[in-house]
Image 1 (tube, rainbow, N blue to C red):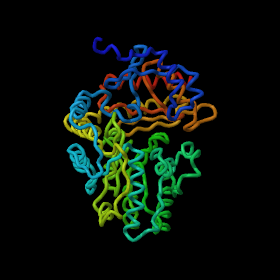
Image 2 (image 1 turned 90 degrees about the horizontal axis):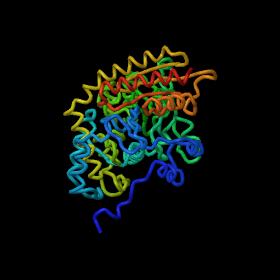
Image 3 (image 1 turned 60 degrees about the vertical axis):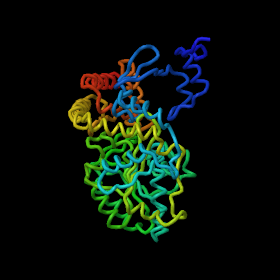
Image 4 (image 1 turned 135 degrees about the horizontal axis):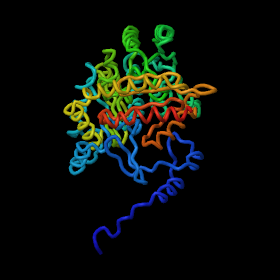
Length: 442
């Protein structure tokens, strides 16, 4: 028998679609609608492009749910994982140390805002938030303030899909089915440019009046991704840090989306020059393997010393896995050695200019940009329909015809392309966005 005789043949496009429809339950997808549509069938990805089973390519306008900040199949990342898998693919991290995990923890803490000195590894951004929630509650239990169990978050927040993370979330369509099992969270208004004073007054009142029972405030720094790429001023974050410090409330900053240069600097919290007590990472940290991290200050970790009964009893099977750690280390090296952040500045300016022009189109209600993010709210007839609106999906269909993948947030259309997307491909993507919005609103 010749080598490879028993290898399965590749499926045809129609076979993939049939098998998918028979077996796969897709995330964030109305399955009855999906079953009636012709899906995009991706067979490979490279750089800023996805390639489908029909031989077409699509510019990946959202970096595949915000993870591919260095594009797809970056040769250095692929090579690093290949080398790592030959020596140590996995071992449990409970009571075991390995080189890639130790080096990654050191590299993350060195790159983080000053004062974050410890890294706790987990699977992804949602579980990084889950870790932070448990750390915050147990920290106060072991610091003489056991009544501090409540959390404060912003309206419109999204911090992930696990129960703890979803409890912090403020996108109602995501919360509603699980309301009976989510824990209570103090919700304060989003600090929109037109309501900054009202938002900060509500936040101040919540913390001043309730600080004896509040464990932490949790925020996405400067931009709320899933609720529509809503952007707020860095001054709010600075005032929040001062307020939390003054009333001894922990500050948790969720950099899962905004981190790794998406807003300009490596960490969005750098815009405000603040250090949180806990900082959560995921997505671009390890772009094609399960990996997340919660960074903590010495003060937080010191509360867990003193014996087994004070330890953090939390840990997932793949937390700190050597493959993901090796990949995450190489990501940091590529950022530094290829000057990714510096080169992205001019690309961010291109995005800002394109979305400012987009605002002149009839039916575009509002545009905004920050770093490598551009977003536009659409409205026509009945107005902006929010996350369940259909206008953005018209743009999606028009963009697909033109060779771009844009996954809208309801009636909000946005781009978050790879930070290293070539300028000509970025210009093509932005032209497709404009043409697709015009066609969808015609």
